[in-house]
Image (cartoon, rainbow, N blue to C red):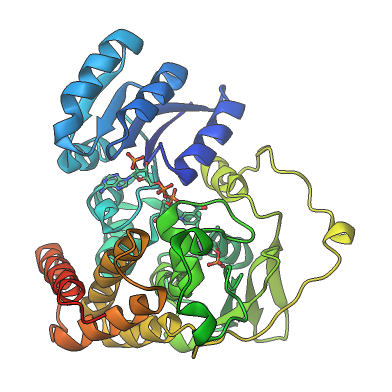
Length: 393
Ligand SMILES: NC(=O)C1=CN([C@@H]2O[C@H](COP(=O)(O)OP(=O)(O)OC[C@H]3O[C@@H](n4cnc5c(N)ncnc54)[C@H](OP(=O)(O)O)[C@@H]3O)[C@@H](O)[C@H]2O)C=CC1
Ligand SMILES: CC(=O)[C@@H](O)[C@H](O)COP(=O)(O)O
Ligand SMILES: [Mn+2]
């Protein structure tokens, strides 16, 4: 029986992971569940899954969690705080960690799971964007099994020769091709993009996801983060990672080989496929996802990304070339920008502009350890916030 810690259990990935877990009670037990602030949703999950531990990241919500669990799920121990997430991810309470927290807030628990040699199902792409070098070092040193569940990287993993992770990309792999849906504004001009609202940006054409990643998909920053993620996961040089827009989100990504072969992984856009793959690897299990009906899909289209209307992809590639300090600044400024956009304090086009200005203002280009990365992250957040407050955008 695998004991699964689902960090970010109340979110979109968390819900899909729990759906797969519930389909296989003989194989999996959700032993740890976490949320940031949503006590009611966390307690409802505890009633259903009876985990050993429930963690609320916000310490000010601890008493509410404790009191509710005492009534609703007394066998579940309440805990609180970011440090508790890391401690539990590294503990005997779990052998598998689903890293499904949104944002760089997931870095500590993902790293702790890696150092402790756990199986990690990585959805939390921001943690590898910020701490990629250190995370991969920890995975190699501990023998942790890192299984990407971001749909594109899961597709690449399925199409690459073993070992896909932990050693240099093989020379017979010519390039990795990440597919991008293009988001809700595919084909739009900058003039059309200027007035778009959070509701429009969060209406992804193919996937039901949390609001932050939905906005990232709309700006193409999601694809920029995914290029960085692919670089670290597969030790792929940036120039061997390509992005192609594929509006149907049926081909999840492709690997091109030197002999002219291109391997792709296809499926309906449903994250339960990647999560079931990661939970059961190397076996395959039922995920509740309907079979792909290619005749019903009818056509698969591909086109180049528009990096003029959507500059975030270019900004991410530039940051990747500069190094971990720049990708940390990019990610932090993006988290601030998306949050401000969702609150109506920044325009859609202001997101990319804010990233560019924050990257220009901060000159750190060295970040060798976690304290240095966290310091850069904090300063980038302060800089981006002050730019918004100064109404530079
Ligand atoms: N959704 C998807 O289909 C995909 C998502 N991903 C990635 O997976 C991650 C999760 O995405 P998604 O599920 O959509 O996000 P959601 O916003 O739906 O869920 C986020 C989860 O993280 C928790 N959380 C939020 N902030 C913090 C924090 N500061 N500390 C601890 N926990 C926190 C939330 O708790 P609470 O409910 O209390 O706020 C919630 O459980 C992201 O990195 C995303 O990029 C990757 C591929 C696909
Ligand atoms: C499901 C998933 O992996 C998301 O990252 C998805 O790919 C977002 O779609 P975009 O291709 O629009 O960024
Ligand atoms: Mn993805």
